[in-house]
Length: 309
Image 1: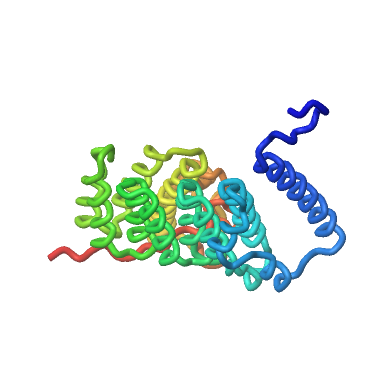
Image 2 (image 1 turned 180 degrees about the vertical axis):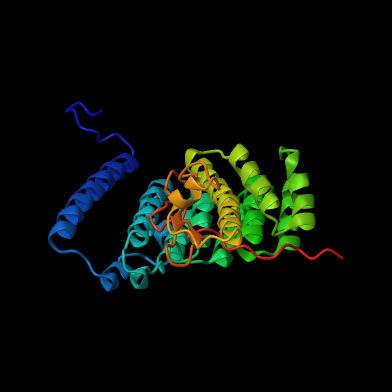
C-alpha cells in the first residue's frame, strides 16, 4: 500500500479484477431491470453471445474460469426457461450447444458442464433438443481435457444405450471405462449385460442403478432416481393392464373407474405411480396410462430386446 493509502504498488491484475467485478455487477443490475420492463424476444437473445469461446478467452484477461461460470449460468437459464415454455412449438434449444461449447472452451476442466450438458443435450423434445450426437461430442471434448476419465466414458456408454440404442457401441465405451485406473469393478459387467440384454428393462434398470450409485453430485443422483421410477412405472402399468384384461375376460364391461376393479377384488386400492400421482384409466376404452400431470412424463419408449442367435 502506498503512503497515501492507495494501491499504487499492487499488480495491475488486482485493479482489473475490481473493474471486472464492478462492470459485471452493473451489467447484471441493468439487465435485470431491462428484462422486467422490456422482455427480450428470441431474435435479440440469439445475438447476445459471442459465438467463439476462443475469442472470449482473449477478451477474458486471465479470468477464464470466472467467465465460464457466467456462461454456465446462461446455459441453465436457457435450458430451464425454454423447457418451461407451455407451447411446445416454441421450445427451441438452438443456443444450448453453442453456450456449452463456449463454457468448456473457457474452462476445459469444467466437469459439471460436460456431464450435465450431455444430459441436457440428450433429452428428447419437448424436454430438450434431442441431440445425443452433440452430447457425445461434448463428452469427447471432456476426454481430450482429461484423458482416461472413466465417468465420461460411462456417460457416453449411457447415451449410446439409452438414447441411440446402439448396444455394441455402448458396451465398447463401458469396456473402455473399465480399463481406466480407478474405474469401479461393475463397469465390466455393464458391458457384458449390455451386449447380452440390450433393450431389456432389467438391463436398463441395472444401468441406472449403477449411475445412481456412482453419482458424484445431487443432480445426477436425482436424475438416475427419476429414470428408475420411470422403469417402475412401466412395470406397474403392465400389471394394471393385466388386471383390466382379466376383469374384461371374466365377462365384465370395460371398467370406467378404479373403484370397479377394487370392488370386484382385482385391485386393493387406487393405483398411484412412483411419484404419487394416480394412474389414468380412460372411462371409454379402459386404457391405462401415466397421468399427464405426473412428473415422470414422458415415459421412455422401449425397443424390442436384442434378438438371440
